[in-house]
Image 1 (cartoon, rainbow, N blue to C red):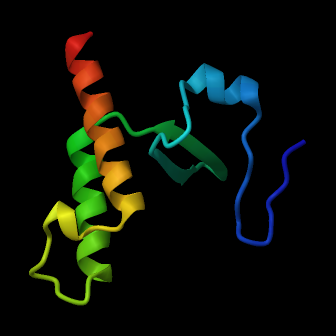
Image 2 (tube, rainbow, N blue to C red):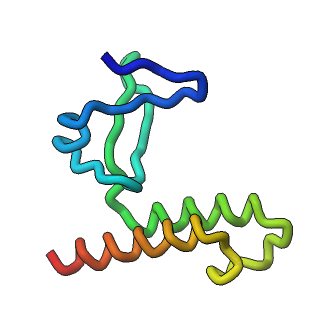
Amino acid sequence: MPTVDSKGRIVLPKEVREQLGLDVGTEVDVREKDGKAVVEPETDPERIIERMESLVERASPDPTSRREDDLDAYARDHAETIRRRARRADDE
């Protein structure tokens, strides 16, 4: 049975991840509904990118600098993963 660790993380069982289509790096929406945790993959790439840009803007020492070149490697990789998934979804 999964447990919550000291940072609040829960490892979802492989079967659940597969049923939900959750791959490494998949953005998810986690919310409470009727006393239960609901986890759903976020499928709107625009919403994911908007949220990421908001996080970058808040973390940036210069909020006017939002060029992707200014992001750290992790953020650039994340943005590219989202774009790749969006292109894949458009092709389907």
